[in-house]
Length: 304
Image (cartoon, rainbow, N blue to C red):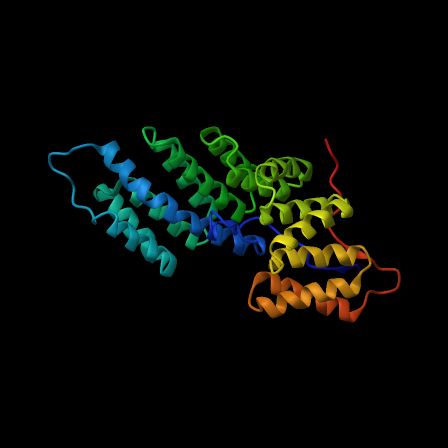
């Protein structure tokens, strides 16, 4: 049986900071973090867009005061998504508009009903015909993130494509689409999108790490190592970068270097997704491969 190491590094938890992108953890957990981190950026805009869409009403329906009611609904969507979904639907029926619709979608994410959440976010974007293009793009971006959580890269890519039509060459969306490409096995296309991001921001460590991961899976270890070394020269303690460099070192036959990188992750962020992968790799490394066994990773993709 082949010795399998944990090698996945995915670009899904990048929005803890828009100005200083951080490394991402394992796919599902990271994507969920990324999707929730997008919520605040969309919240105020949805309140304003809903007010503009509805215009003045002589007898406005009773609603929870926005944005206060919206904030409460979003907070509940994290702590008790089932209740939040029920409340959001009731709010929407009583004139809650876009904010209520969005909160219901966020609650669906919390309930792990990712396809339903994505569909609702797509519908939300379609409803906001008079809203700012950037606002519609953010709703589509969240829909794409929900599709990634559902392991549906084609649907995710479609939403990211649509969002890029509203925000051409947006680096966040390009990294999102690169993830969708990579999840679908289209690694050359992922590299192309990441090239655009890195050309505009050469010191963007997350994009360098994701491109390194793509290059590794394509079998281009020298290019992969160059990217991850560049990323770690900027942020030496990036857990995703250390995990990726450990993976590359292992493939290059440098077991001691791989071990050092994985041990550093465990010391830095012991409860993270990267640490879990590093511990798994360390256990396998300590056990030693059967005679003639090699590190198993995803096979190189074929360029169409």
